[in-house]
Structures are given as structure tokens and as C-alpha cells.
Amino acid sequence: MIATKGYAAQNVETDLAPWNFERREVGQHDVLMEILYCGVCHTDLHQINNDWFPGIFPMVPGHEIVGRVTRVGAEVTKFKVGDLGGVGVMVDSCRTCNECNKGLEHFCAVSPVQTYNSLGKDGAPTYGGYANNIVTQADFVHHISSKLNLPGVAPLLCAGITTYSPLRKWKVGKGHKLAVIGLGGLGHMGVKFGIAFGAEVTVLSTSEAKREDAKKLGAHHFVVTTNAKELASVKGTFDFILDTVSAKHDLALYINLLKIQGVLICVGAPAEPYELHAFALMTGNKVIAGSGAGGLPQTQEMLDFCAEHNIVSDIEIIDIKDIHPAFDRMVKGNVRYRFVIDMATLK
Ligand code: NAP
Ligand code: ZN
Image (cartoon, rainbow, N blue to C red):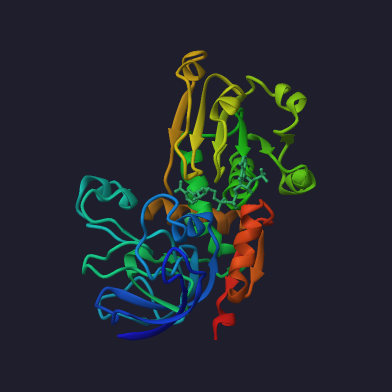
């Protein structure tokens, strides 16, 4: 077994704190990576708080992982020692079901395994990236371009693919008006991809303080959603809305901003279910869609796209001991725009 240092919540009541545990030995198809940086996704907080379902504790969160390969299994040809690698939200799947065959391993119908808060095929809990190393099947590790700023790449593994994937599915691009609700970790990546794909992008934010930043990110317009007049000015104007909000909010308010036949894509995952009257959709043939992360081929495609277009996340690097103050700031919408843990601070 491989000795590992991490930060874990021992149960839903306790804060994250240092915890030593063991990873499995490096199997024939596995790689061992030294984790250099790990992004802090709002999902990490939802999961340690049991917002969605009872979690598996102790829980080591973290699914925006970048690091360096330090050992490879005998059958691994994809990586060699010294290569950079990235791990996102999943670490295993059956690889044979219809979904896996379509490159949708994250929707594997047989044995999907999440990076943490999940059980591996061996029945053992998985532990995430708030740690100094990880052992993962090489197929679930992505190549990272050395041209990009490495800590800024970490959030691409979740926030990046989660926003890239639906914009590609709905073919959002030139001639489309796209709004992004919530300028946080996911939201700012949605803005970057929307612009890169040629859409006219509006940020819908509760935070007036983010107006200048939105402009710097390249957004064409900025609307403070608490200002009724500003909101009314964009009624019925968007082809697509990407909803990245992490907390309860009124969907009907935003659906009202769609053009006829417009699509609102939910990627944010508040703890409470949405409430919506059917009329909000029937009037104007509106569509609500959802999207979860992305499969292996599309995650690599997104990373390659980012390398080609020099796209990384805007980040604030933190010491792992400051994880709870960082969570508190994230809940207040006060993160510009993703916290990334420097794993050297774990030593
Ligand atoms: P984040 O960095 O905290 O950003 C969320 C943003 O939503 C905030 O910055 C804030 O932006 C806005 N917001 C917060 N509370 C709001 C409220 N009550 N009403 C309106 N807007 C509000 O979080 P994140 O890491 O981007 O994650 C966002 C959500 O996506 C989380 O629920 C997370 O679990 C989920 N997620 C889903 C997937 C997936 O596969 N679909 C993957 C990763 C994460 P403003 O200040 O601009 O208003
Ligand atoms: Zn995430």
C-alpha cells in the first residue's frame, strides 16, 4: 500500500483536518501521481455537508487534480515517469456498457466510480485530491500541456469540462446570445468558453462588484439580477442560459429571459429541488436541460482546446490549512474565480 497524507472530514460534523491513509498499490494499468495542485469545487463543500445524499466518511474531497507521474504500471504506455497528468471527477467505469462505448464514462450504467465519496470496483472508498498523491487507472488520467500555467489548469478538470461540454452539445457559438448565471468557478469558465466559441456573452450576477471583472474576462454585457430594471432590459433576449448557481434560486425569473425556444442548461446543483410552474416552459416553448461533467474523450478534447487557445482558470492559490476560510468565501460568492490548493503546503 502507498502511504498518503491528506485532509479529510471524519464525519459531517467535523472540519477538514490532516489525515494519513493508504492508496492501493500501483496495478498494471495504473499510474501513481504526486499531486501538485487541486482546485476547490463547490461540489466539495456540498459533499462534506451531505447536501445531496449521505456521504462516505472519512471523506477526502477534491476532483480538480493536476500532478506529475511518479510511477507507472507494467502495461501503461500512455504515460511515463515525469509526465504531467490531470484527474477529474471520475476514476473508473466498466468500459463496456453503451455509455462507456460512447465516451460517456461518467454515466457508466454498470460501475461508475467517482474520484471521492464513491466505492471502487474493489468495494473500497475512493479518496480525492486534497492529498499528496493518487493512484488511478491510466485511462482516467489526462494529458496536460506544459505550455499552460499548471495551477490554472487544475479547475479545468471539473469546472472546465462541466461548462465546455454543454456549450458543445448545444452548439453554442457565433450568432448566439449566451447568458451565464453566477460568476464563480464554473461561471467564469462558461464565460471564457462562450467567448472562445464566438457567442455574445452576458453575465447575470448577484454581485455588482464583479462588473469590472466580467468585462476583463471578455463578457460583452453584465446584468445585476437584483436590479429589476436591468433584468427587465434583457427579457426574452437569450438563445441559451448556462445556470451555474450553487444555491436555491427562482428558475422562472431566468427562463423569462430566454427567447422563444431558448434553452436553460442547469449545471449548478443546489441542495433543494427547483420549483417551477409548467407555464414558465409552455409559454414560448422553452427548454430546460441539464449537464453533468463530461466523458474521457471530451475532457481531453477540452484540455487540448485550452492549450491551443491559452485558456486557464483565474485562480487564487491557497495553503491547505486555509481550506475552511476559502469555503466560507466561496459560499459568499467571494472567490475570483477558483481557489486552488498548493499541495506543497501539505508537507
Ligand atoms: P461557486 O464558485 O461558488 O459559484 C457559484 C456562483 O453562483 C457564485 O459565485 C454566485 O455568483 C452565484 N450564486 C451563489 N448563490 C446564489 C444565489 N442564491 N442566487 C443567485 N446566484 C447565486 O461554485 P462552483 O464551483 O462554480 O459550482 C457551482 C455549482 O455547480 C455547485 O452547485 C456545484 O456543485 C455544481 N457543479 C456541478 C457540476 C456538474 O457536473 N453539473 C460540476 C461541478 C460543479 P454571483 O456572485 O455572480 O451571483
Ligand atoms: Zn467539481
